[in-house]
Image (cartoon, rainbow, N blue to C red; front, side, top):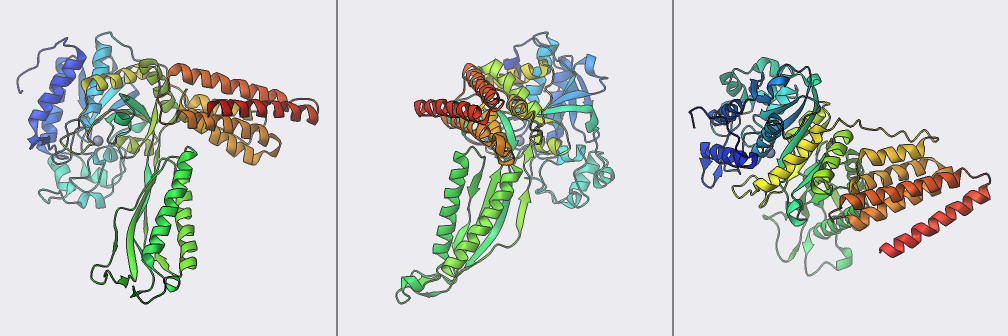
Length: 546
Ligand SMILES: [Zn+2]
């Protein structure tokens, strides 16, 4: 593995399979691999990738954070570039595909262009990042945070899980300028990065369950967490205290958590993105007994969503439910402090481009939210227009059983190729204050999300928001929202073909045009009759669909 690698024209799928095998062999650990952040093994992986890339005629550079960048020779001096790639480190005894899949996919896109099998609209670089996993220093995304100036001096004191030496000392050993990192100076120039698209294996089951090779990611979920909420009631004898006189914290918790689930399910049915978990629950083992009404129950709460606004709403909902139950049952909830991580909202223009690319490659475009965090979130936070692609993977992640097929990876690579071959999309912003252009804005909101379920959900939301602000047009906007929502309901959890997406788009455009005409009629009576006719047809359609 140390000798020179001969340039080959081996098919790209075989090239990828060989690289995965060779890199797995560099750091086997039980059934999995261990590639610690900022370690010698991580450097060996990067060296191996560099050797292969150079042998294939690519240019290899190292940045100030000792990450590697690969590009075509003609793009080595580019002023600005699109970026793709991911991380090369792994958790202890992790899988071989977490991170590495995105780096190898980026190399394949470059090699495909090198061989004249595809084109690039703008210069493209592939980055192999160090240190994404939090397993080694307790903080995640170290490599990308250093590049974008998002690490702090305190982060540099974090001890390594294995050798106990602080991060600072590991950076010194690699000749990375730890003082610059501590000062928050970005080690990379993000103004030169036109966009970042990370391909990553999915670490949940959505693609396997839906039998899809890949998907476009809409957002990386953020969360809020209460580590330990105490619900405090009144202890008592299980035989003597009448049921109606009890202040049982376990029943209060049960009411709270099942009520919250009901609320969350209703939000999900409206097309919102969220998941909720109460993973640690218990009464005090020193005091609890089978014949005792407990005095207190403690529980954790972890709620995640891709939407910043929804997270805020959910937090308010949690508090008000606790208040109501406290009063009704005469118990008390003590939440302690809340920890909040904001979601990374990916760039609508990049997401739209990826959806169109996926539609062209796969015949349908699927958009999912990412439940796990990724380097992409760091680039998005640094203001780089960012998108992500997931590739199907079985058996979860961060374990040796991760299973991605090369065939699925190649679908992801084809989506990347189609995306980077096309001129970049500009994200449309909606401006619902402008009544005159309101319908145009709605259509642009729709277009900015591609022909997808996501586009219908976004349109429905925008129409509802506009309806709340504009009484004169509220009925028409409500109809549009309702049509878009019933489409979401119909196709939720089902693969959407490209032609179904196109048909739905045409139908929506026709409805919007019809409503626009109705609202511009000379008399109110005429307008009302035209709106009524449109509403009647919408209802008939919805009945037929259900
Ligand atoms: Zn990863």
